[in-house]
Image 1 (cartoon, rainbow, N blue to C red):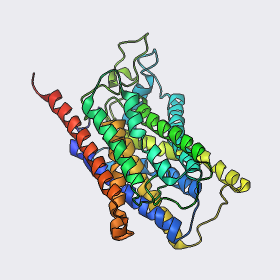
Image 2: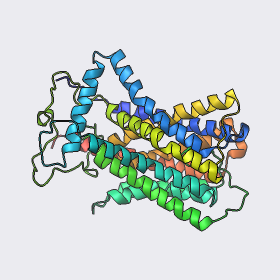
Image 3: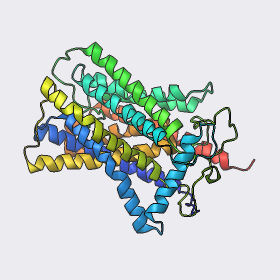
Length: 400
């Protein structure tokens, strides 16, 4: 049995930084693709980006085999042990003899459904309601995530931070700042001059999408993240799958698995498990969602058009690569920080996109009072959550 060392907390913050940067680059490339290059195929781009998730696990596995003494079979064996234990926690048997393929497939289908539906609902809503309304309602998912994890335990700092972040988003959106669209993820734009065709329907669809996205984050932390994921938040907001009533003593350790554990890296290295799930979502998207491309084409909803130039192709590749980095980092951080901090932290992308529009876009014309005040509020809200997280961690390790 090979074990992996504890991961420094700074790794999580480094991943968070790369995730934010990837989002901004993806935003700018998507804006360039749609405006400068005139290539508007939202579902097709969505399909390509989400299918590209499949590359992250092989890349991570190759990196680990090249930079460590671990072999690929040992790394895979460790994942098999971890997943077998995790997926068997709700079953009566305490020593599963084989990998639960059906349960794993069901988990992947649920994750694919959970991450796809909110994005597709957003795409539908953006054509019916104003960009400002859709963006404002979507970014309330941090508040919904907080409500879903509230357990009759009043936490004033966390509630204040989430509420403050929500207010910051509203100030940015209705303050008239500029931004760009991101495939599958909404962002701030100039208010469209086209009158919305069905604003009420669009707003309701966005509300459902926002609640669904918050629910996805909460359920991922509760059911998909491994109990061995390095928690930075010393609280029990997100409990993992409980043992079955017939086996209350079931514990998460290698002794409960009827596999040969001599050649296994256990627990898996930091980020390998969420990257496996991310790749599996990509494969599921690649194999299942392609059927909607001809359907949308023949119904006239989105006429399929191949990229007309190499510049368009390379831009799409750039969007896919940065989308992989953003979503892979998002999945890793969901397991480490939980949905509240991650969802509020992702609102910092609004601030970065606002800054990037000033630097690379409209310049000083992009500066508005609402954008400046709203961005400051969002940064302050995230600062409150980080302080709350570190304070709880400090109190957890402090001697009594």
